[in-house]
Length: 112
Length: 112
Image (cartoon, rainbow over all chains, first blue to last red; front, side, top):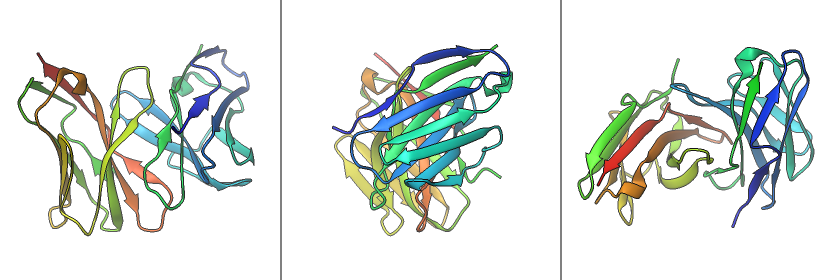
């Protein structure tokens, strides 16, 4: 079974803090993704990576950066957290040749 | 400009009856469509997909229909079961792109 794990299920941070969200997958997938899910807005893509050290902006990259130093690990960084970044963050991965994505359980981030 | 739309935020059906979830898209370059299911406090899981060259794909109780001329797809669940109660996301993948665009989701409630 594919496993995508995220470092925390719940996280509370203060405004202005630097926040790291980690994601690890164990299926040698080339693609990895970060989404945020907000009520009524569905899943919105923040960034994705199709290879180590490669990244592309998604639909809402502002305020976020990413890092992919190893194939299995994809990190989402909030340089200076703000209250409007309070959300559910979901990581996903997939093979290039396949369309379906495998998701982690999500991290509920609250910025106060 | 929302390229994938699920116009019904919620749907309630009786156990044993058919559930029909709908999705509309605007981009003719989408070549693959997927449905994901999400339970609370879990990440989405892949349910069923369809290529743009087909008009129907069936997997057990789940069938997806694609009407390319109308840019419309639907997911049929027959018979519906209480365990099907979840949020269902429609997603579309652009030709040669690694990423998918998601709709806002429809919350299905199946009443015993």
